[in-house]
Image 1 (cartoon, helix red, strand yellow):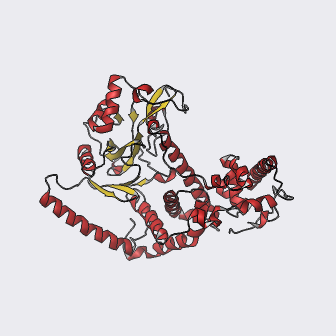
Image 2 (cartoon, each protein chain N blue to C red):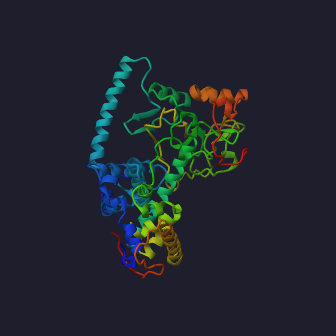
Image 3 (cartoon, helix red, strand yellow):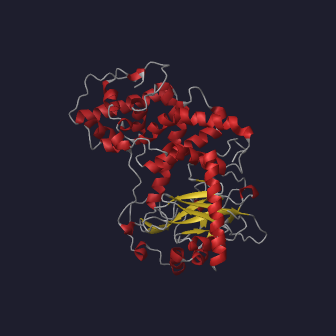
Length: 190
Length: 284
């Protein structure tokens, strides 16, 4: 790698600072989307490696940007997993365990989980960014590489769809207030 | 939840189901996990140093100690092998068979495919073989990628591989789609822009890592690994392609497929396969 002499100390320090500052949040982001632990670790490592290579682009705050990188790495992971699945010898009868989307596990447990599992992957992701990752519209839009206005539209549609499936199941989640027009500029994640 | 949405009952209901707040389901961070991820990230960065700008992180002391110990162990192993075995030491590849990963590192970029394949066989790996391709000088000695290889029945057509050879810079062109009547085109782009990070591939530089439970597991496809070698005036026009004769030369399960190609026995029924949902039209 990178020079092994003392001159690279500050960079190592900076890398460790980036890693330590965001590992826990990024890990939660990943385990919300990938059940398989080994795969989750791979995704985390790759995300940090990419982030470091592009560190000159790091915005402030960095977390939504890191989530955006991670979002793409996860998408790539899923694509490559699907490719491998297609190559599984059908004679074998069993399919390799590629790990489920944790959101699918909810379907076995709760009504809202079942409703969530009926949404498209894109709609799930929109809701996940808000409800689980705790992002505001601006930060979530950065993750999905779209404008905040576009994100609000997607959120509105996803939320409407979720409510529809819940209603079909006879569940009315209180007086749900649509937040398709959220307030701007709020920072931070859980 | 972010203040943007704190009044939304539906989202609050969903937030309560957050898997990350349920350690019994998502497994909390384990001891050593963070260090392992950090080491893996550093390894990814290390692997790129040959073709990217230096990024200035020194080997961590702990890794340096581990590397030193590994070096000593390797030296002892080499001495033992040289002194007591007629098969000779592995010199083309460093093969590390761990519980979760099989890690393959190119040690000698000038080694032939036959040498590398011999070392894989000596390590007890039967469903992974090497087929090098000529490429840009700066890429020599690195892995361009690998091709999954195994029969799957789609429609009435048996396909032998993925719909795109896993070479990052290669586009999903018709040439990269291979079926029973075409070849695998492993052409490495002339610009050598192998950007593994952009496609999330699990390999980097001279090191390639395969999941241990997929290697030599008949439930998974076999794999043809593709190192980049130096170009040679003797390279034939089809040096980047794998056809029936190349498969026959690789032996084992690959030769079975090569024989099927040669004999024209590539219908789904020839492999006892039942059709699954068609992903792409036949012939593409």
